[in-house]
Amino acid sequence: MTVTDTGFDEVTAPLRAELLAHCYRMSGSASDAEDLVQETYLRAWKAFHRFEGRSSVRTWMYTIATNVCLSAAKARRVLPVGLGGEPSNPLEPVAPSTEVLWLQPLPDAALGDPGEAAVAREGIGLAMVAALQVLPAKQRAALILRDVLQFSAAETAAALETSVASANSALQRARASIGDGAARDGRRATELSEHEKRVWDEFCAAFERHDIDGVVRILAADATWEMPPIPGWYRGAEAIGELSRTQCPAQVAGDLRMVPTVCNGLPAAAMYLRDPGADVWFPFQMDVLTFTDGALTHVSAFLDPADLFVLAGLPTELR
Image (tube, rainbow, N blue to C red):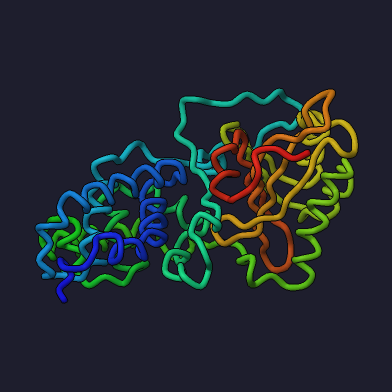
């Protein structure tokens, strides 16, 4: 039986998780990645009758997905730390910026069962994806296809619809731009030490107790904190404590509820905020934690996270 005799869903459905991860690496947005995968499958379904098996179905689908992403490429997505500038004053009022395209995390639950999506989980660390966004779209694609997915030079050139020489040139420029240390991520959730697991638990418990001093104690002294779409970022555990005391709408114990989860392979916590006057909690932010050498060194707290909670398989309210 040839691949064209086999049902479209049967041969393409097992690739969905890794294609979602690919579109996420390319776009830097979990929400956009979902739309890009949908467009990929639509184009593939329309063209399936013309597929002649000259390449594997996987290579063919990646070629379509890559070109969908290149066609939809926008201005690069960033995190507040990536904007440069000095740390912000935690006592100054915060306001979101709609002029910047912000990087989003990708909940691991969106990739399905871990045993079925090992390829998808490679190269989706938050720092790695942020570093990829610095590259022009074609260079980004060349680097992902070659260095993350281990495509051959010929397969990469075919996916980019260019010559091998041109694809290799894009790859070289991408490698030179990224450098060796630009995409270093924290410890994966599956690799945390017992100490780091306790810190993760205490991070959640301290916020639920409204114990800001407790949050400060478990952060590294020089920890950084960012809150896209707020463009500022903050350095130092004490400054982060002041930010929480003065800017967070939670006022007493029980205003926040925390649900541990995993995003980009990293430990995370879904933060729910109580609705004033009612015992119902709604999505408030998704906190992605970076552990370095046993210490909690960075928190990316993504505000307005309703779509992220859905992708993470979390409820849209708690009662």
